[in-house]
Image (cartoon, rainbow, N blue to C red; front, top):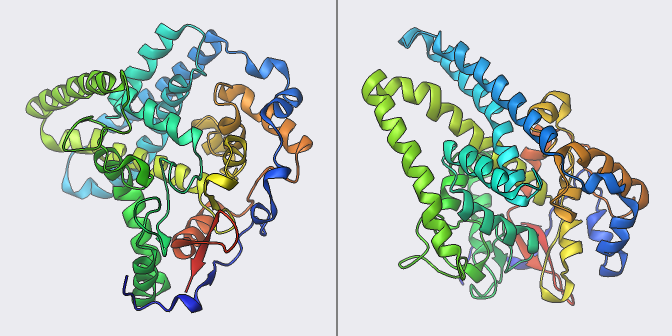
Length: 392
């Protein structure tokens, strides 16, 4: 592939707040799953349905209060800025419902699987997330976290990749970063990821690994790839679509009765903010200039899980979003641990495996900008199966 980038002049991206900690780890450093389970208090593995429901009711109550406030705001041109603020607040509080539906998809909400499925299906459908489709693709993401070909989200382009076993095209992104410059390229990255990343993933499998091809979370058959939907999962994708269809019909009725501006202001604008939070969390969980991606020889489930990064989101966001960002490492190791036990389990692995547990203390906005401007493409490290972030 011809490229204006001279590959001889690429170098590893500058270190982040992890201070190269993840790059110093080898396969032998990673504890086994049984070793991790031994240090986590047994109660952390228990799911109390009543407690989970109480958190669900908490998020519903907060969201209801916000919506009531929104209904009182006039739909007039001079209130556009107020509606902008409302979208940020409403989308931020609604993310709590997304997180609890996410727990349902992992089996962390309740031992009553029928109740769990109903809660997850309804909450995700209301947010236009195809529940079972996402459940399947997200389970693949957990199984192959930071795998360079089998990973399911935020799989990077590769410098000198062949496009079959790796996502080729890293040279082009490096060239674009040079052409635009650091600041314009960083802004472009933020716009593409935060505004368009989630719908692009659902509709075309963007950022998914090359193993699965061009997938669609609403259409599990041709002309899209079927590789992500084996066995009964294709039928479950169609079942997910029914939930989305009911919500869309409801929104259409709402628009006819109260006007399209009411739907946009009270629903679609906050939903955009929900999607931004979702991509932001996922991006920062699994991307950092110090965090490698791995080929088969250097990959294991536990190594991928320990390449997740916990970050400081603050008390308010941890409260609203049930600590999804500050306890994500343990979530990848043991995804059936409910969020209300995740902090205790995180402390256990942090104390027992301090050399392996990854926590980046850099403030979120600075981490986001660092990743947007430095995590451009990866290149295979000579003599290993590690793929490291490159900067020209």
